[in-house]
Image (tube, rainbow, N blue to C red):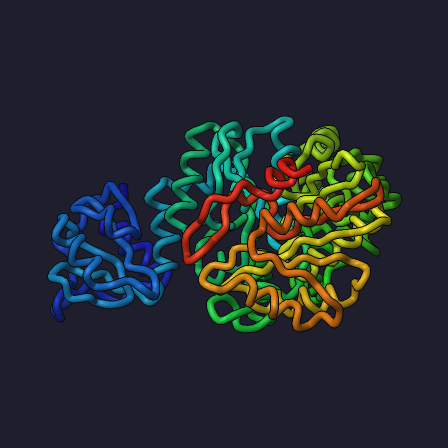
Length: 483
């Protein structure tokens, strides 16, 4: 529940209140200021007389609001007066308003949980899974990740956004509290700050994993500077921070967090890897000792250190960290299958140039034979990835490359493939149907040293085509079918 008077007080304190107006008439005292809304929503189809409704989105239409008024809506919050006969509480930023009022409506669940957030171009999901497995040893964590979400520690469901809209986020937090959860682990995207989804939220620990150009395009970030800036906002909204000393532009972060309670990890830090093997690593510093790990690759070992350092600040013991890291597996992250001929199949979510480069490096360290790569690029978003992929692959003429569909949306997957191929000076194959591409790739291996890399989709069991999620078995399932 939230009263009109309470909502006004919160908005005024945030300097976000403009006025209450209806059809050009100003209201200096909105009727029954003690009236309390029992629902809160940004979906006009859910709105009625008891709903505090927010108008958001570039494509919101006046007719949506008119239908809600017909259903009984008596009040709405917006940046514009739509003149539909009911009072509009006008604000300068409706997304800021949504976040602050959602906190109040759901009883400030963020104050009843220890909050851990991961940001970075890659590794957020893997690090979040490490943290979840560490904290569940002695605590009761909930998890909001790109891959899966759990609010009770047992039931997992597929996430829609990396970081949910604020109204959904605080509703989930409240449910986690009701389920007896003590901690919440989140992935916080650059979009979360760009779109104000976590406005006003302070995290107990914020972790910055890495940065490389991504999510740059007409509907995302206009420049790398804008992308990096919005990533860094997590540092300013965390009580303590953990930062990768080996990341690009580390000095920018080091200066930013110098006055904060912080830990650095990675090369030239006190929390560095001393010895790295395929399934174990030795580390110095706060997590000193040898740790077993199921996910191959030094970058995954560094993700485990980042999660361990963060969890140490949230009440985890060294024993919890050791056990949690050893237990962690992540759907669609470095999952490995073996064909009858001994060749390996690697399924990984690597979906930009930097993460693909690291994936290739890890696989080629272990597999010395014929390497077949299946790759695509998303349609209508992240267009810069296509050039990044092409330039990277042009450095690997030893690969057998098949370009295929990866969430083509409203674009032709072969046209996307041709754009990637335009940066490659040797011949590559193109097969629009991803399942057919995988079937072909597996048929090209012969021996134990060979490998097929299925990059991009991870554990996603759909293809985004014409703005719809079309059912797709998933790379792992398709690979199993044709082993």
